[in-house]
Length: 422
Image 1: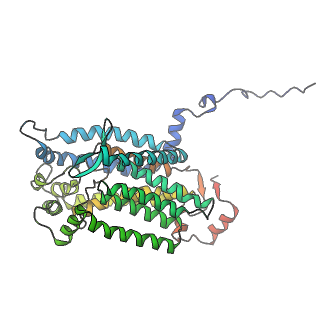
Image 2 (image 1 turned 60 degrees about the horizontal axis):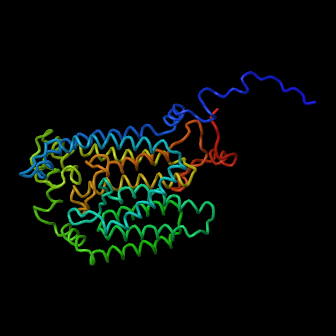
Image 3 (image 1 turned 30 degrees about the vertical axis):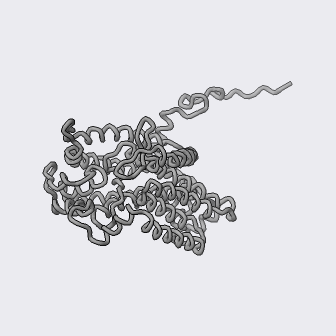
């Protein structure tokens, strides 16, 4: 005869907030809000808000240039469209940030495969704009390379993290092969600026992954040889580089951008009072930083630069104690992607870098590009999520950079890898 089980009140009753044994949507949102880096999210939203103001200032210049005798665009045409795209992009940002690290990795790998497949089609069915065939129209016109950027960082982090399972796996060979494939597809468009950005992200992530210096040096040598060949094989790249080192003329885009940037002095001419911006090509996208300089002054430009630096530093601080190699590499790659694109754009506007046709992330007007940038930020927030009640006892990025902690912390490492705050 079976002994009667003791009665436990409420033992068969499931918690009200966990229907079906799963967390409710509201509980998931509360956990998400607790685990994300809210300072990072606030900095991103602040840059986007300033970008909205900048687009409003640049919109009349671009609307005037694109108006024809048959159609006159409203001066704030691009501003109103930018607001719509920003709302959509913010939804993408929040949706991506709700993902777990595992799901963020899966999304990145699948997205990388899909975008590389579309890039194979771009030379055949792509849309040509300003002499470059980078866009594809599938109901909405977009650049596959823009969405490939965050997917590349996630996928590369996943490949490089295989070394934790088996140090003998040829992760450098595989990662370099992926980069070479993407670089070849980009140069068919041609897109030298994008190729340089992908290469820079690859370099940062490979160095952090601990690859041998000899192997890395050989790959860098090959990359320099490829860049040299690019100068002689691609007329567009050669003309831009020659114009940059030769000083150009007063009618070059970069020269116009530099003159516009300093025209407002330290405090700017005032909103809507800029004159030189009316001569700028792509004032609302590639050269919006120059519009900010003319209408809001060099001080405003410095604030934008400081905000980008704050985002980069904030992410690196978040990764100092990260124990998961995939999260460490993915977070570093994504922020290198964001910061690298921002500073290439700024250097072009300062006439310190050849023109690359690259927008200022979170600031420039954009449709699909704004969505792609916010997807990058959303994935960055997702991979840097952390339970605030867990205390790490390793240094993550700190260990890779050789930042010591002292004997006390090293003793704690020997006892456990992670401990819960009491």
